[in-house]
Amino acid sequence: MIDKPSGVSEQELRRALDQGWALRLDELHYAPVGAGSYHWTARDHRGDRWFVTVDDLDDKSWLGDTRPQALAGLRAALDTARALRDRAGLGFVVAPEPAGDGAALRPVNPRYAVAVYALIEGSSGEFGPPLAPAEQAGLVDLLAALHQVTPPPSAPVARPALAQREVLADALDELDRPWSGGPFSEPARALLADAAGPIRDLLATFDRLLPRLTAAPHQVVTHGEPHPGNLMRTGDGLRLIDWDTVGRAAPERDLWSVLAAADGTIDGDAAHRYTQATGHPIDPDALRFYRIRWALDDIAAFTSQLRARHGHTADAEAGWHALQETAADATAAAAG
Image 1 (cartoon, one colour):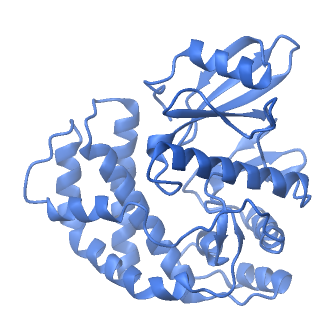
Image 2 (tube, rainbow, N blue to C red):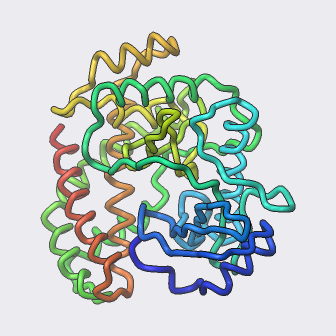
């Protein structure tokens, strides 16, 4: 996130870190990186360095419909990440450090929650560009290991239904009237009007495949978003970050993008590598389902952002560019 959250002051955040983790900070700097959460880097009075993540509970629709539900869902997700790292022995899982009361995160105020991570030395990837073959193979190996662990009791079920289906339906029903939330509302409406046909086609395919995925017999612990932007390259190898989407689901929830070749087909070598490691044959329909779900989820999220009240901020501009990309992806997915 580029812009700082409007509902959290530095004083509030420092107090939450002191009360929750006994962190008395000499330095606290906002880090305009990533998407979906707000981040700071910190150094405490002992010289230890930390990565601080703040989540807006109003922006976690897949975790719950209310702030208390989203807080409980986020806590379950981060507890699962800790269990995968500490009990299942998956050292590539980047999980938060427990607060003084053992909690994985704590509220900053009713709308925002904070978690603390040890700062990792390394470089992060970027969403979009494909991985080099060696890194793709490494990621396949990580997912194969993840998918074979016994699910921790805290692991939530990642329901395949769209969390913001009504948001998308309302937007498609209101393409014939002005959107007045801010400077990007009308451009977003025009863009969706042009892509409405492919989006409705994707929704129809999604609805056709949904019952099968809902009843999928083979479910594993999935990360949810193992794209290059959630990979850290460190001296100890690849690490996976951002576990707020963790959940039990069909393996293809993780694999649809990882197994994609440059031309959009399934990479046969990567698929064979995964099947050899796990014994699970890849389901092409499940891959297609989760590719479609990703596109629809993104369109719903960015449309919601740009229909709501907003100014010409860096985050709004980023949302507009992202909507353009996801609308193009939806058109390609409908064609393919």
